[in-house]
Image (cartoon, rainbow, N blue to C red; front, side, top):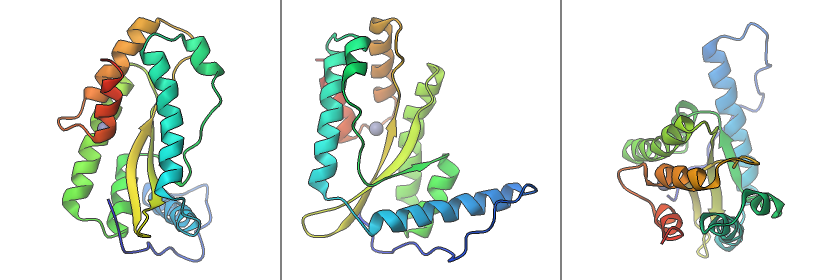
Length: 187
Ligand SMILES: [Zn+2]
């Protein structure tokens, strides 16, 4: 999803007070996220850089999906996706996307899709993390994409885990390209 508007943030972040109300907390987090996004936009990775990191993560996951052990999975080096901003929940994500000028339909669609994955993941006891990852295209267009990440346990029933991961990936009504790519690992 591409965007034009750069989100504006308050120059002074409100101090975190002990008697912060729920609204104040929300406002503070939104401002923090917008500031993080502004930082990322100032040093935006290219689409290729993000894709290269994702390929490494996928290759690691594919080995596990195709029968590799958890032990081997955790021996692989941790790969970080450049240009990502983490969101604590969908409410904050939606509000930030609104500030960035995204259409309500796209926000709704994004929240529905990602929350389908995350709801399923939580059922299996995972604590998934929710992100927007930012990058620029060859044409210097600013893009961002939603993304969620699950940390695989150090040990456990590997067959069960593979099955559960598939259920999490298949959860949304309409699957994304990357969901379909992950499902291909199960062929
Ligand atoms: Zn998806």
